[in-house]
Length: 319
Image (cartoon, rainbow, N blue to C red; front, top):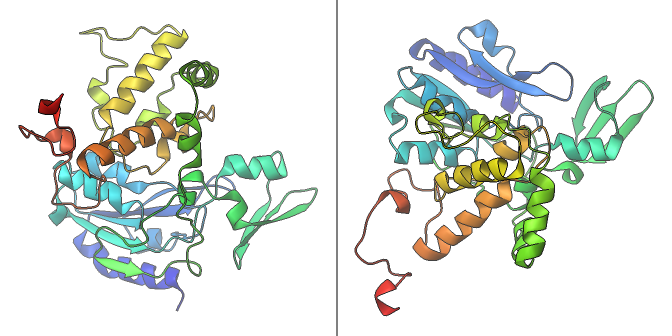
């Protein structure tokens, strides 16, 4: 029995005790998978599991806090569940986690760079670490590693933070790589003027659609977001660079020590702005100061949600 069939069987066994199970189904075209809310066995039969299943489904959990929810989650995405538990945003007793081993995802921006226009794709096939994309004109055969999301290139956690049922996954061993964050190292190596020019260049494209906020599993104050509140009126609806920069900096600061680097913000951005590096930078600082990595221990407390008279790595009394 394949991993997918094993997963479907286990979900069907658990479904009577749950209000719903969230997984993935085929999206609007062969290159997209979308969130799938399963309430019946017929729904479960539509479940898919392949490298196109990149969405971090943990983002739905805070809005379903009063439900008994099953969630299909990749190892890296269980960090988001762990962080939500740390902040008491979900109840562990109401969550059933079906963790699956992820062989690596597909970054559609990289696919477009390789094959050109992707709106007319007829079929997609995965075999032995390769992806074959067929258009009306030709077929493109790529190594899956060529189109991995950047987050997979710095993936450091191959075991789920928490799991009720574990499954091997749709492929062989993961091809994700534990590498340094090249994008972040490059940014840190820039001078201030060069770094400001870099962000000015990218943020000028921002259309303030707030897809980055809406996709983030840790951004849970959407109804009271500083981007839309009018009392107090923090931001205008003007489209100048200062307003965009103000929103992105506040958003990043609100995620300091909380972001699990799932990459949903960057994946959801329609303008391909590399905003994940802002979160990575703050995470690097949090790890250096507090020896803390978000989401790894569901019993821990994020350092910026606690108070200590003296932090071991800050030593402010020595200044």
